[in-house]
Length: 280
Ligand SMILES: Nc1ncnc2c1ncn2[C@@H]1O[C@H](COP(=O)(O)OP(=O)(O)O)[C@@H](O)[C@H]1O
Ligand SMILES: Cc1ncc(COP(=O)(O)OP(=O)(O)O)c(N)n1
Image (cartoon, rainbow, N blue to C red):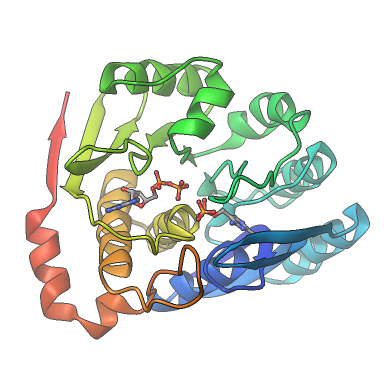
């Protein structure tokens, strides 16, 4: 059967992040992509100019249309906007017994615009985390969710333990915001061991949508039946290639190139050999 994945997220009119990045990523992984919109953003490489939530009923109906009729092999959530919309998502996951749930706890866009209301943080922790297979916060998101500051890898480990205790089966704390570090290290915790995935940092302004792309690639891997560790590794390579081959556009943070692994297969093989992975 054709593998599928559902993204539940916001629309980015600029096409670099959100639903658009997720569907492009699913397609590149030979996964049939479906979507349920939580909000529409007016957005480009300069930032977010407007946020227009989809009414809760509209989100519920999209989820019902998909769940009543179509197979869902993985779910990726992105911008969820507020607690009411998170509740609709949690209800649908329970009702349709969806599995392989990847939660990218999107809070703030690169330009600083809020994509999740502050009052929804606690609701997400209490209701979405316990049914999450993999949560993929960046460092600032992990700080907010765990109420701690993160400077070192040891801090990140502590934050991962807290998120696992709160209910997520696996935690990936991404390292893109660890500015200044020569390598970008993503940290995976499964409740017993820490696994590190490291690749050289690419100096680029065009990193808009990297978090969405990473989580969608990870969900694609799970949809195909990969282990979480294998799916994280492949997602990291996919994002590295996407940043390496960005097609610059706009005045601000440009989008990544979701087709890079397909376009440069030889290079993807060398990046695969370059990834350093170690356990602790
Ligand atoms: N400059 C970079 N060079 C290489 N990889 C990066 C870079 N920035 C981010 N990444 C990768 O992109 C993904 C998203 O990371 P991050 O920037 O931390 O999240 P977000 O986009 O949610 O803020 C991670 O897999 C991270 O390793
Ligand atoms: C609609 C929408 N969803 C999510 C984001 C944030 O995406 P992310 O991958 O974290 O990328 P940056 O915003 O950090 O570039 C978004 N901007 N819009």
